[in-house]
Amino acid sequence: MAELGRPWSLATSYDIAFLHSVLAALEGAPFVSRPCTAWPWRDVTARELSPQSRRWLSSVNLLLMEAKCRDDVEDGSALRGGFGLRLLSRKSGQAAQTLQASGFPWNLICELPKRQARVERGAKPSLDILSLPTSQMLGEIFAHLAVLTNLPAHSPALRRLGLGLGGALYLKDALEDLDSDVRRGRFNALTASGRTQAETLALMHREVTRARSGLAELALPELSNLDPILLGLLPLRKESPPLWLGARLRQTRAGVCEILLCCGADLTLQACCYGCCEGCSLCAKKAAPADEPSVLTTSPSPVPSLTCPACDYPMTCTHAAGVEYDECQRCAGLWLDRGELQQLAQAEKLPYQLVHRRPPADAPEPRAEGTRSCPRCAQIMSVMTVRGVRLDFCSDCQGLFLDHGELTRFLESQGS
Image 1 (cartoon, helix red, strand yellow):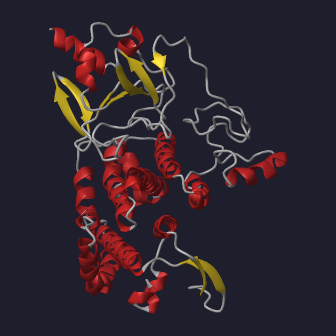
Image 2 (tube, helix red, strand yellow):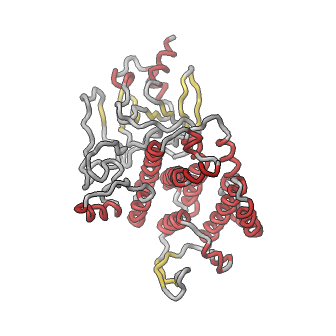
Image 3 (tube, one colour):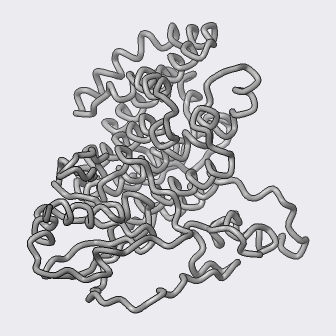
């Protein structure tokens, strides 16, 4: 940012710093000693990006600031937002040209306030729909890091990381701004969707899980220090823990126990942790055994396993009727690659467990249709209706995701 002028070096944010860390790791940027921006007399260790990446990242930052100013104007803060827009007017056009030259769809950032306003005007929109513009924008920003570093294989994992981070940040802002928005009569996602703070926190936890799965899929040791930062988006429970737990809490904040959201400070394990604490050293919650033995032949899933588009749980690779598909043990959803639905429909007999499987009673609420990301390429899937059944469809890899019961309805419609 300092290349735009020294004062601009202060115009950054935590999400841009996070993005910088990921980009530096992908580039293999060297560690150097540089004067600290806030305290110039003090040297700090930094990673210096390539000139191309620096220009791209500073351009993203400028357009994000411009989008925030436009959002302030929309929310009634015309003085602050208008001042920011005037300050950025000379720089934003140049930033858009830089992003366009790199092949990035820069209008995703510039048109964010308009897209956000459109979904907010919908009739009782869900939190998934409301967070989608921000989530999708950050997903594409992170995915473009694979283009900048010529590492296309990392694109799906990077997109999933950005999608989850964007969704979590949107929900976090909505939670933190709830009281002030209600006082001022401004729009807030919780009141618009009718969600409670506890429900929103559970959805936020789901988004953090999605971001962490993308980060883990990158399998870069240099990024391991970012996982506790993602966990830090989630607040610890407000109850005061016993004094003897103080040392363990310090470990928790460092990521040893996946926060105390699941078990609370008293370790009573009263609430569902959405998969965060399996084998956790603090609460020692283990995965529940299956209710009944499977009649299907299950093979080890590829590493890493696919992530369920509906609930972000690792899926299991399974075989039936000569078809290899992926099944979610949490929400009973199915992922079928191109042509596999037709193969199942043509099979003489399918296992009862495949056709009639239902999710457990404590399964989390699935992500809304139209906001789910493909487990193969992490693109947001569209919704298509086939024989009266709504299916999630990825236009890139031609894969399909079926919620529980949709395969049964599809097969029944075939026989009618």
